[in-house]
Amino acid sequence: MASEERLSFSLNALEPVDFLLDEVRTRDPGRAICVILGAKKERQPLLALLLLDSELARVPRLITQPMAGYIRYQWWRDAITEIAAGQARQEPVLRALAPTLRAGRIDSGSLHALIDAHEAEMERVQSEVAAQPEAYAKATSGLLHRLLAEAAGTHEGRWLDAAIAVGTAHGLLAGRHAVPEEQRPDPAPLVGRALALLDAAGLRGRRPPRSAMPALLPALLVRKSAARLVRGLDDATVPRPVLGLVLANALRRI
Image 1 (cartoon, rainbow, N blue to C red):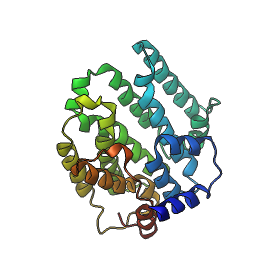
Image 2: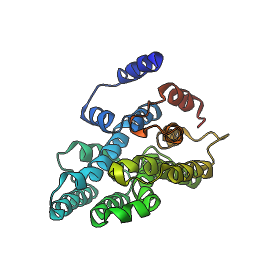
Image 3: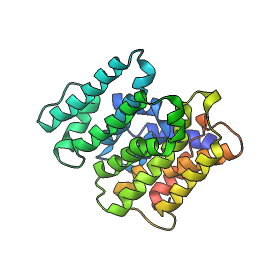
């Protein structure tokens, strides 16, 4: 553990701590490491995508009236549309995404779909969310991972499909914490489905393109979380397998 902590510290020293990096490290530390390792010149838009997803996901927890949530989601829709029209509001996530959007590496329609999926969270009763976790995970985290791969320059369909599968698996396990602890379902079916999604992605024995690594490396986080859940341990504080992520990224073996 001490060696992993030293390695994590050295990774942190590689980049200046700007707003995006600092925020994503706090909110989504595991996937932040995956982006830091797997992306260089595309790092800023990828961090912006992670932070955008985090902002969208926490709206239902911050509001007291649904209308306030609808207004916030519409703000993001309008801001994304403005980027496509050549404008960008003075907001860090939008400024970081603007060049990637204008270059056509990701499209505004996909970002609108991500907003729609999170907005629908406010319209579901808690039992419905628990009853269809995979559909929600695919529409949010699965789409996010596809966007990460596309923003980093991945175009081949099989790797985009793999990114969706990894993102969905990640969302399935991480999404348990959006449900009050007393209402959380038995983790066993979710763990089984998450691991099945990773198997279906066909990652073992293959070397993904470098551009797909930020979206695919979180498969290691899913396996670590699944192993802890199987042992009856809380996956909310899963130690991040930094050394494993470094090696996987270097060898392009997941």
